[in-house]
Length: 117
Length: 118
Image 1 (cartoon, rainbow over the protein chains, first blue to last red):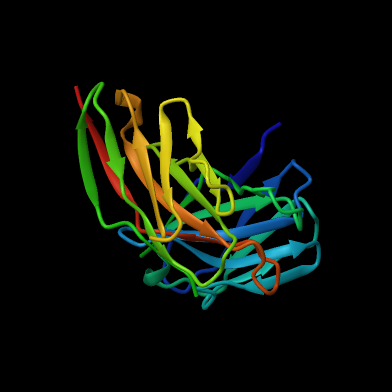
Image 2 (cartoon, one colour):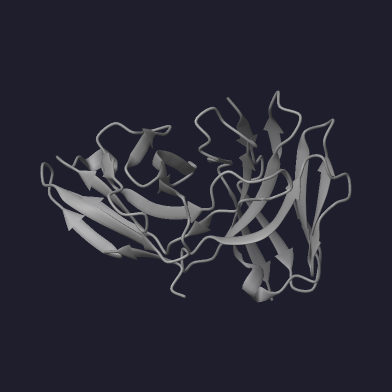
């Protein structure tokens, strides 16, 4: 079981370039999430998905797009990168709706460090 | 919207001693979940301990325990017999049982950097 994996681990972009971050999970989780982590800010939710083919905006969605074409994959896209998007990006996944008492904890990937010059 | 506050940006503890990290949160919900995550230099987010609001008993996981004060909206983490490997960023997180769209999203505090002195 690989858990949650992210590709790539590091990336440097120039302003205006585009890229896609790939997240994959092998735990058959329904829910997947993309967070960004900035110094002194904790983790903030960018977008999330509650199932294949569905996505929704989180706290800081501007400048990002996502797609969930397959249950196990969740892609995060930057169409025109900006220096403000320099950050560490984390993907996470969890089970879906559960009964009371289930923590439905999120499992995190190792993160991607993105630098936009 | 819920908020999570960690008022100690940095803390230090002597090896083998005990340290307590503070976390407070603001919510109008009566049932919710609270978590502490550890982030070592490797960057991996590791779940340390969790607590459901309707359970009055404080959670314990080996050397890690919490002091959950629901009325005060406080959720502190106690690390006993601190070890060098405990040095990391620690994040407190809140999750609603249901958040409209059913996202189960986590709201994180800004973190506390813990150093362990040999």
